[in-house]
Length: 274
Image 1 (cartoon, rainbow, N blue to C red):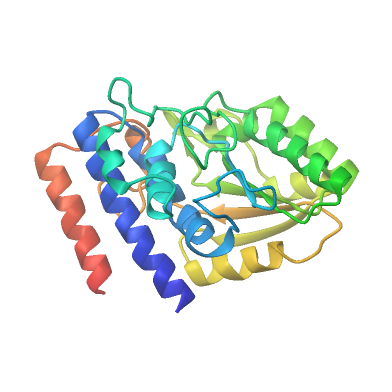
Image 2 (image 1 turned 180 degrees about the vertical axis):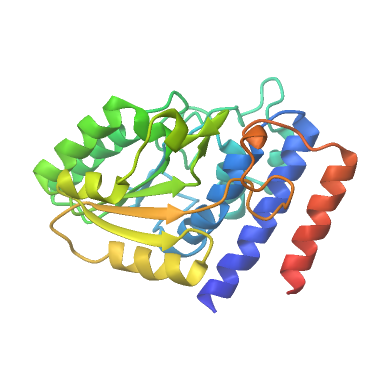
């Protein structure tokens, strides 16, 4: 039942974020769609939070390091009750709180401003160190893109997290193997990725990033007491759920035309019925 609920919410998120991008005339649909199942699992099952008290000290912290994928993040936050769903219609408009990159000053549920790649994990490591010092029991989760792992600041943060044994910290890598314009392995190869994290003192698990059952199992385990930080490599497909977007670098950016949008909704309808 947990997995069915996550699937339903993920389908809703895909439909909602595509509507936002079409209405705004801009966005990052490929990365939004690859991250949707991960975010749905976190926000509709795993994370501890109260949207009525978004700054409650005991809340779990989530950092969206791949901060350009706000279509997916904002739909998750609205679906979880942090702000009215109707506000999603203002996405990227002038004076909207729903910027192209998330801003914690404007929007409840956003822990830190992200967008320039390589900053999310370092901030999350700082948050986890604070929890360690305070002996607090909240967890810290980070979602990073795989192309973002080409930033040196990510590995500096990973090294410090391993050194300090930040067991309350979990990084989820959206491993769709595409970045803006090309494949990660053609741009600056990441493999053997799991071995790299292990070498920095992390536990590592690999999972199908579009399988809610597998995601729930791994993230349930992430919530247990640990002595080492955990990296979950979630194997995904850019543009997941929309056939003409899947595994296509060109949909890193892009806006579906009317015919494409209709096709995307039809495919998502069919998935929901199946």
